[in-house]
Image: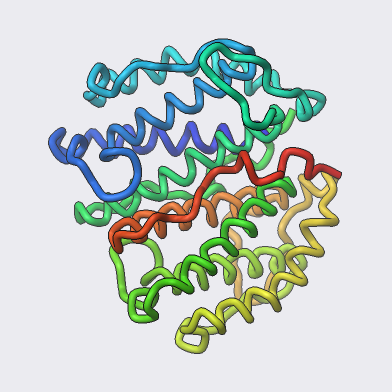
Length: 160
Length: 160
């Protein structure tokens, strides 16, 4: 489980670096598909990742608006704050948590009680999917996207 | 490991169904990002998935061209053929295969010997990434894309 989170974090940080070479108006420009544009989609990814980690512990999810975080610097800062909690959870993941069931959370009406394993995979796939969308927008800007390769990132022995 | 493959297969089949409602010229149209267009990217996904499964066993990868498979029907047929081998491998996956190292394969010069675990995760991420690209193109066509959600697909207890 852990390896695909490590992959997502590497790729996301590569994208932050990529964003450094792109004018802010292009990062903020509304685009087709995804969530708003490049930076808002990155914001959405970190919001969703953190929110699900919180929800598994019965804590309320993130409710703030992108308008409060609409610069690359602020998104990175928010990521750094959230990452402490997210990383601690992922690094301490154990297979026996797989079938834990999502608890009651204020403000959420569960139609179905997802398992923790299901939520972890949802979070992984969610980020990869949105990064794929950003890669199309990168090409539309005439720029080479960040590599989406999992191989070649030194993640072959991330177990334990 | 298995769950994210099951997810990819479900999503891919949802996309085949989605394609049924789209004119063939739109499926074949060259687009920005991804691999060629919608149908060629789907073809690429199944090519890459099958090729890596073969490579782990020291067998040569898929070398055929999209031009031989450029209808939805042919892509689905190819998928069905490949799926037998892919599915058997994934369903029989065991954690002890994680650190197996990719063998010699005719025609490939390895710069680095990837582990089987690494290759499996590469294959998973590869598909999700490309599906994200297709979802942008769907919106460009004015159509709602297939859901990328992992939750809600009954994949919470796919272990074992």
